[in-house]
Image (cartoon, rainbow, N blue to C red; front, side, top):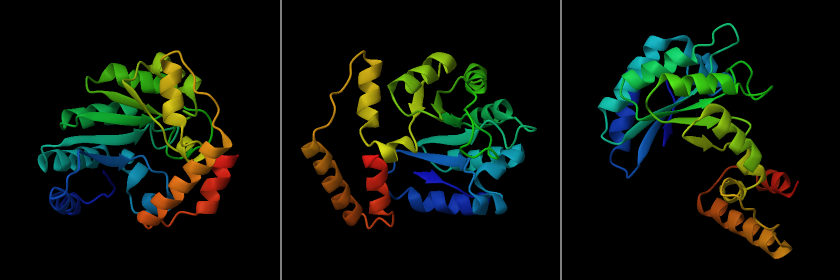
Amino acid sequence: IQLIGNDPNALAQAMDILESYQYDAYDLNLGWPDSDALQEHSGGALLTTPELVALLTRTMVNATNKAVSAKIRIGFDNYSINALEIAMLIEQEGADFLTIHGRTVEAGYAGQVNLDIIKAVKDAVTIPVIGNGDIVDGPSADRMFKRTQCDLVMIGRAAMKNPRIFSEINAFLQGDHLPPLSRAEHKKIIADYRLLSKKTNSKASLASSFFKYKT
């Protein structure tokens, strides 16, 4: 489960509550570019205060025996690229792994990811590093692995357009490919999605998701 916030005391209280559930790991969001989060000095804004990043990470690590990780970006903007400093702090405070998105917070999702900085982070720490950003298919996942030597990749927005992306990437990396889905298979995926959305009381727009998937 992923947490976001800037108050160590509130984070400790949240961890205390969550420990009663069966979560496998906890992740601290240090990269979200959402304007509301930034105004509250949460998400990506925390990259501008490394000492607070260290304190929040330490708070989570001390609150659980489960795995703790953090998701970061390469920096807040092009004038404050500090991914190496942040990554090493996160490791020093006891995190088990980290994920890095190859853009700045200010860039949002515009422009290309910086694979060189992800590679530099991978070289700078000993904990596993997960590469994230612009992974939309098998070739882009393969490029992330080869250029950065990251341990794993994380898929984000691309899964909204193609729910089969995980299987397709796995097949590609194993030198295989999946055949195109039949019309019946498309319908089943949509039906399963509708059922899951209803079961979880999702507030997301089904029409929007279907459109992205269809296109």
